Image 1 (cartoon, each protein chain N blue to C red):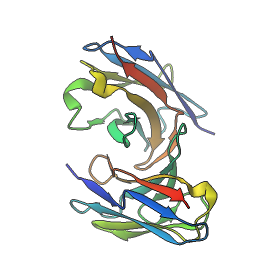
Image 2 (image 1 turned 30 degrees about the vertical axis):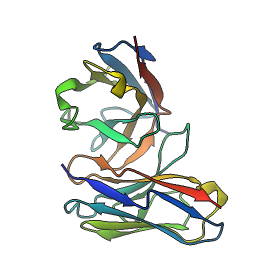
Image 3 (image 1 turned 45 degrees about the horizontal axis):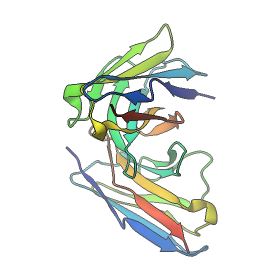
Length: 106
Length: 117
């Protein structure tokens, strides 16, 4: 099984800050890595697919990078609406989610 | 616009089988090159992939749940289903169905299933 580990588990930042979330895979997932934003009571929202491709309609302040076993999600200028839990997901070998990173606005 | 909607009992007794359906509208469940999946979120925990089915009918299950999970499709109703047997309280969760080509772009709103006697 491929394990996905996110860091940090929680993150508190101010509006306008640049934040980065890291996701590490226990073995290479090539670039088959997605990022989701999940708010309470709603379905997860796909932000990034294939590690760095921005899903249509997602604000350009979101970006993804990495390949192999290490990936990052960056929000270039944090907005109040970005308060949510973010998950990485590999789909190279079956599917596995990271444990999530909760982003809070100071 | 593709829409998915989960349906099924909100309460299941321990040791029984949890059964959910996902009805697809705005598209065909037979559309090529897509995966149809089930994902769940237990209260206070993260997302867990349960299993997926390729449009061709191939199925893939989370190894930790494989012995208890079955995903099937009913093309006449344009829906796919999840069966999870021998449930316990640990199976209490919001269950989502989703569609994608690897990553999941379209999701249902989710349905809470509680396992309790």
